[in-house]
Length: 188
Length: 113
Image (cartoon, rainbow over all chains, first blue to last red; front, top):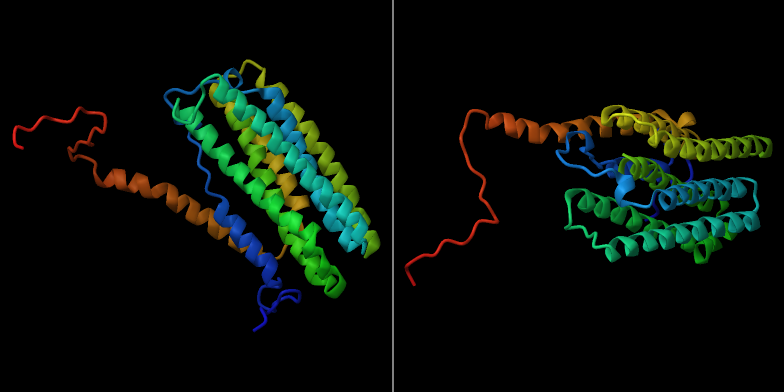
């Protein structure tokens, strides 16, 4: 049985199911709770973490959000080649983010900072680790849409564009989470 | 259609530039000698501004349908409910004396074998 309303809009919601589904998923993801103000003991992030590296990584992730939305816009402009160019950049920037994060983690381990060292570090590693898992998930999905998944462009342009839009919404959400994680963990 | 997308692309570039500038501002502001409450407030205001730009323009929420807004409002409601559950649990125990087991306490020697 075919899934209904993949491309066309439902009369009651005015949305196709893809868009409503990805927003429901993102809404369920919004469960990060930080209790910085109530913490009895909390180090200044700048004393523990590398702020310049964190700032560069923020710029890298914002850059990948821009390239992702450009990839989507390219499909709207009916250009698969431009889409592939921008999507490649999105994946490349995501991988660069992970490499920089890897260097940061490695440095923390070298100086004896582990998740069990303090509450702050437990939260730091949990939050950034979960975020990194989301990055990996996004890279896998985006790579699929850059490679084999892009074949759908030949048979159903509208559905492929919708899929990329949904992947883009997820990707921007991952960027959005980092926009809050960076000041909260690194700067306060 | 094409002109509409071109207009969107111009917006994407402007938003990307604004996000980069606000990232620099976030770092610079963190060096100002604010107390913790003010520093947290300022940092979260800037982060919320950046987040709003991403959600509004990259995720197109500014021109989205009502069903999406309703979904997000429902999420916000249940988010607050989740925050209240431990508070209500605590309020339920007010006035009662009870101890929490100490996982770090040494294991007591029992004479029986």
